[in-house]
Amino acid sequence: MYTLLSGLLRHALKKDEYCILILGLDNAGKTTFLEQTKTKFTKNYKGMNLGKITTTVGLNIGKIDISGSRLMFWDLGGQEELQSLWDKYFAESHGIIYLVDSVDVDRIQESKQAFDNMLRSEALDTVPLLVLANKQDVLSCATVLDIKKAFHDSSTHIGNRDCMIRSVSALTGQGVNEGIEWMVKCVQRNPYRPPRQKDGA
Ligand SMILES: Nc1nc2c(ncn2[C@@H]2O[C@H](COP(=O)(O)OP(=O)(O)OP(=O)(O)O)[C@@H](O)[C@H]2O)c(=O)[nH]1
Ligand SMILES: [Mg+2]
Image (cartoon, protein in one colour):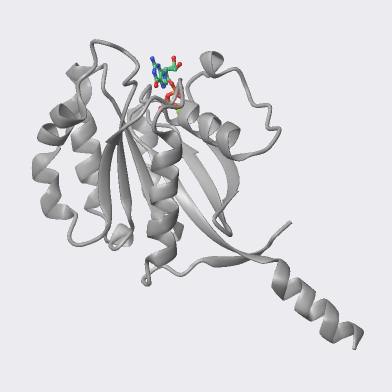
């Protein structure tokens, strides 16, 4: 009886867990986005000062619970020499959040190139993609439409997976909730990448 009850309890406490990679060039705002996400979705979370985040050399990990699921985030460093490490994480990922620095218009093509390289990996087939035009709090930034145009011919690699581009400010938090809520719906309905089962604690 005890074994049955404890087994049922363990089952009830299990959570579907999805791994979301946060990618983009260095300085795009990935770590700021992760910290903002944790702040918004974790009660009483006291994270680091968003204005004091420095470049990521390895990776940052974070988790939130949302809509009955757990999202595990892996925020990888975006510097050129670190981009070759991204594909080590592709096979285990359920979703990609790709940040573009809308202020640094000189690097938008470089960002598109890194995006296309990433999409060439078959390990990412069927994985939902959320492209975020970040730093929209800065008046002089490129608009979502500008970024859409710049990334237009990448659509040939996208196929029929869920894909969305939207504006965000990781610093002020504008658009962060909507982006995360979109992503959780996509990973939950994607039949090709079932979740991992983890203890809910
Ligand atoms: N104005 C503005 N600045 C931002 C925003 N998001 C990030 N930043 C700034 O951009 C700089 C880089 O942010 P990070 O979060 O470290 O960027 P990253 O993509 O993690 O960079 P790497 O770790 O080097 O790959 C920091 O000075 C942030 O404060 C934003 O939405 N608006
Ligand atoms: Mg970083």
